Length: 611
Image (cartoon, rainbow, N blue to C red; front, side, top):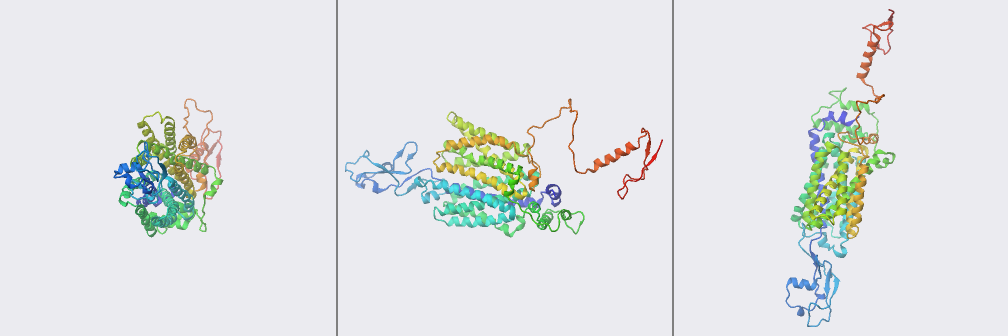
């Protein structure tokens, strides 16, 4: 049974109850975004820091005299032109220094011996960097923590995406919320630089399950006209969480407090366990997996809460539940699917691969644009709020354009603009004015964020319901790999930045050709079975119009195998007229009282009168 045409209208469509549960499905996105972007403040390096002076490396205090703070630092810390005091080195003076001490005495440079003094940081007063001194020789632990966090998200999308297809959207959400809340509390209490990355890896995997299950359920509760707007509004909840984080960081001051505050919304989501009506199971998934008994209960609940009357007792012959009983046998068993079955498909696997590739580009290439923002302005808040602003503009742009021009066309436009911006920055950065570099970076960041968001939404629409969790999980796992690529560059002290930029710019150009192979899903029903997913073919690139002046000699019409009552009635009328014509060499008369077909399905005897 087609869900949009036969089931959805009879349970109230996108009625009041559907709108209420859609609102509750946006809150998990807010909670997940708080925990995702708080990692930026946990590992933010202060803008200014230097080694603590070590008295054992300095001349005797009797030789130094009364020095000012600036003069004392000049004697203690080397000065690097263009960057101020050295971050990782100290001066070491000779032990047997004479009494006629001058600043030109020979001195050695050694690494820091007593820790660091940090300037005023942006946001938190105390984070992982300042507490565990993750600078200089230990700087590699910061990108490693990012990589561990993104690895957790990648594993979570793959594993919990499959769990969404086996246990359902509601069960996957509740399990992910429980474990993410517990792991968030454990991360608050961790006091080891090795335990915290492991806990964040585990929490990232569960946060991926929260995001994925709520995203899929929200999409399956909507009809085609509302799918885009509902999905994009969830993006505004993420933007609101990003805007709220700097203020929370200033108020919390310490990173364990911020970790506790960001975990609190996850604990509040545990109320969904007690109130099943605010986040019900997806009836589309229940029908697609042949769980008919649970599906009938869920449909009754939706229809009753939407104000529709669906009851076997009232209309036993015309209700939706009776039609379901006629279509599905009583002893039908649930049938679950997994992403391994994609090896037997061609169209679904191709769409999954292309959309995963575009999402990988959209997330990975953002590092190339944000790095230019840091060069233009070293202040943290400038690049942070500019990135949030471009994310909000990307959501607005998609809301306005995608339903009008189609998913494939706008995805193609976003890929083209991203590729062109990247190539221009790659080739002309040394010759362009700083303002033009900033404009190209902002445009590229905007288009790449739109490319990433639209790839996720497009993938959720073209993937079948029975494997939507697993396939969308694979697509989003590719996006996490792209996000981890920037941390790999930082792990090598940005040694491979140029190669990183070249590779992603080339991939962006290549994705333009791949997007041409995708189908169009605008205002179309969601595919439920693997067969429905295989039927999705790409539309023609150009709509051809037949020249009316030169029509073809033979023009074939598509043959329809379905029975059409109107065509059959026209055929019967035309046959009657042909048989009653007077121009025939002999006349055939048909009694008007006799039907063409008798009640038992046999044709009556025809009476012929020779003229």
